[in-house]
Image (cartoon, rainbow, N blue to C red):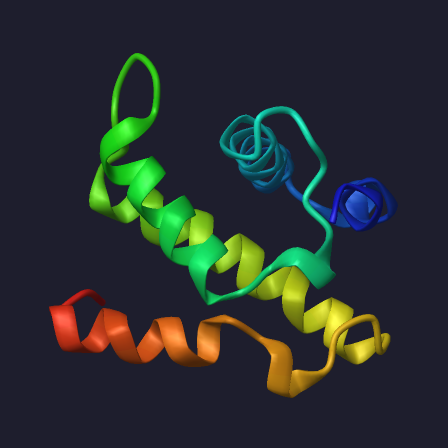
Length: 107
């Protein structure tokens, strides 16, 4: 994901670039400093990351809209990974996570 962000940097707005880098930083913090590979993303990881953003993040938790934006960034880069065949579409953890969000009333 970080590699793709850097490749896209010239075409991204400053705010988008900062938002994408923040997501990578949060993923690293959640994963105890280890890089997160697309192959490691599964439902449990995404659900745990969501819980981390809502409840466990040091200093303060994020607002609901910020959390949704964090997930959107990951989904966008998962889509890119699917397009370049790094990830199979059937392995996208957000297929199940989205259904859970709808059940809980998230947007």
